[in-house]
Length: 147
Image (cartoon, rainbow, N blue to C red):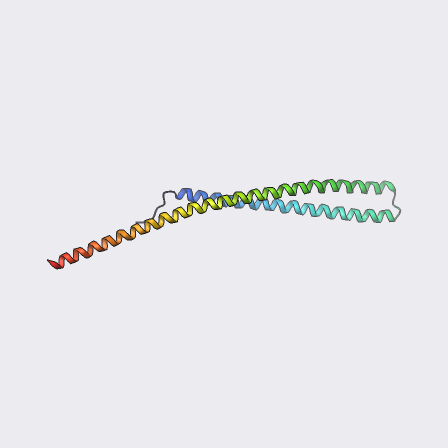
C-alpha cells in the first residue's frame, strides 16, 4: 500500500504560489535595477553638462548658449528628483514582494510539515500492520508445530 496525501493538491498549490512569488520578486528587483541604472545615466549626463558649462563659461561662449545649458541642467535635476522617487517606490515594491514571498514560504512549510507528519503516521501504521501480520504468522506456525 502506497502513501497518498489527501491534501496533496493544496501542497502543490502552495508550492506554485511560492514559485510565483519568487518570480514576482525577481521582476521587482529587475525593475529596481533598471531604475537605478537610469538614475546613474541621468547623473552622468548632468555631470557632463556641468563640466561643459564650466568650460563654456571660461571660453567666452555666448550667454544664450550658457543659459540653454543651464536650463538643461535644471531639466536633468528635475528628472533626477523624479527618478529618485521612482527608485524609492521600486524599493518599497521589492520590500512588499519579499514580505509576500516570506509568507508564501512559511505557508508552504506548514503544509509540507503536515504532509511529512501524515506520511510518518502512515509509515508507523504500515509497520504496525506488518508486525501484526508477522506475529500472526509466527503464532500460526507455532500452533501448527504443536499439533
